Length: 209
Ligand code: CDP
Image (cartoon, rainbow, N blue to C red):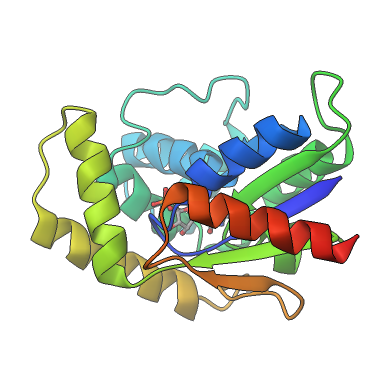
């Protein structure tokens, strides 16, 4: 089984894919974390928008260490969308992602991946594709709550601005832009809670079989 979940920042992809992975006993890959890890390494080396720096960071990445401090910070997300716009960086990371989908780790029989281009580029053959969306306002509220629960300082207006900027960068890049695959089920989750989104996803998956 292979499930592709895409969507803009803070749409709830992580919450949904954790539930799907548990329900179907799948290996789960949050591909955003990989771009975030590259961006943190690139920031150590200099400007993450610089191709040479971003490529060096991607080549030096160890996939076994996804727990870098600061990985979930908004600064890492913003820098991630800069390294993510560089085609050579995406090429390096594509191999790892495709391999994960084809050979799920830990003896799992399938995988669920979330990101921006899973249904369009990484796993276009996936039989189940979901595109999780919500208004920018709702997504800013979700991210604000998430940061507060983690005890991080957060300013809602700054989060909203960052989300809008990052979506714009992700949608307008020339390589693997954020967009639903033609055969993806688009779910507007602005008025749905996490359980309702999960139920809608399960319903869609059962209709494909
Ligand atoms: O958690 P959030 O939805 O805010 O972002 P993320 O999934 O951690 O992704 C961080 C950034 O990585 C995104 O804004 C994209 O620019 C980039 N990304 C990508 O280009 N392709 C992916 N498959 C996953 C993430």
